[in-house]
Length: 378
Image (tube, rainbow, N blue to C red; front, side, top):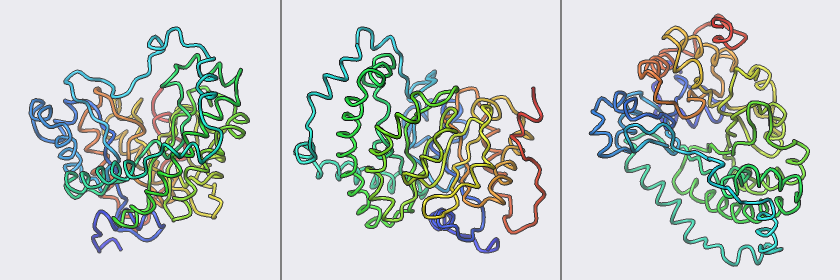
């Protein structure tokens, strides 16, 4: 099919379904830094700051991205991050705060949903899709509604110390908070199933909250299997049953959890930190409960290759993605997290141009069986 040019939407749809494609699709949305984005967009920093979303879209169009996850973007010239949890903001919060919260919540689904405003939630999702169709310049929206992937990070409400201590001291209370949030998000998922059909969206969603740091899961996998993962399964089941394939965000050393992600209904992964020893070749041999090969939003490294590598390093990393996906099967080019202000814009241009130029119908030579940066750099 290399000689037949597909539309962005059809390219994404066919790759999601494991069908033949003309080239490997790419995704935008997680590129940071005002100067980086304005350079990619071909506009001044002042022009970008006057309309940041328009700048993000122009940058993505210049990269010829096929899809756009909900873009996270800077709105100030020197802004480094768009999301940050600082423990100092939660001084004085004790783990009993989670126990009190759980005690204040309903114990049955009827009461939980008595305050759920389905119409307001539908309006929120419709507003997003309508805005995406209007403002993304023909780039296909690939939703990443975080509330659909689980509600693990209670640390954003209570801080890390109180949250992690509560997991140890009051596991049932933590589990109840997750359950209540998830009952409501299951209803949101049902709304999204209808909207996916109505808007004829690519059956693909990116979600899943951070569960791990560089040393592994923040809490034990056994705790997650008992108290957390069943709530995630409850949320995503309507979408999975409707044929939407969900990609789980994978910061940190998630190796103890990837089989669990697949077991509850996720179809693939995004965001691996290869320097931690994560082996995508092993992950690709895994299968979903339906026997599907996994999908990969294969992340250009934002900690090594993109900020510190040369053009050859970037191309090597793209070749690595192509190698571990057996020629690009189920591969979508993306960054492993939001890129920083230190990333040279040309490295992003090289990656997105190189993936477009690669012909999936041509014979290839496997170049890398391990992450190339670790092979070629100290």
